[in-house]
Length: 136
Image (cartoon, rainbow, N blue to C red; front, side):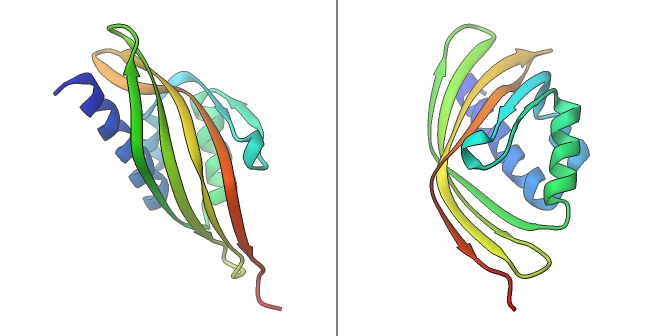
């Protein structure tokens, strides 16, 4: 499998493990020192895979999520590094009935670790967020 296809499968695994809440499998998607920036989506910058997984479990553990990634633009920059941009559409529904339908992009870097690609950095940018308030 070539590197670009391997990175596409890595990102598919990211989306699947996020939506199924398979936190152990999701941990394997990231380098130990991943940096995740969600400030443009109302979040924070989180340093480290374990800290990011703890953040996800706390904020999205009870939320039904559906993530779709499209149109990857991936550049392999060396034998062990790459970068990419993915178009994103996601839908989230909280237990209280509040919903978010969002559109944007993931801007990422990747590192090959022990022969497999991992996400090294991730920045989520939003173009649009449609919010539906929880029922009164």
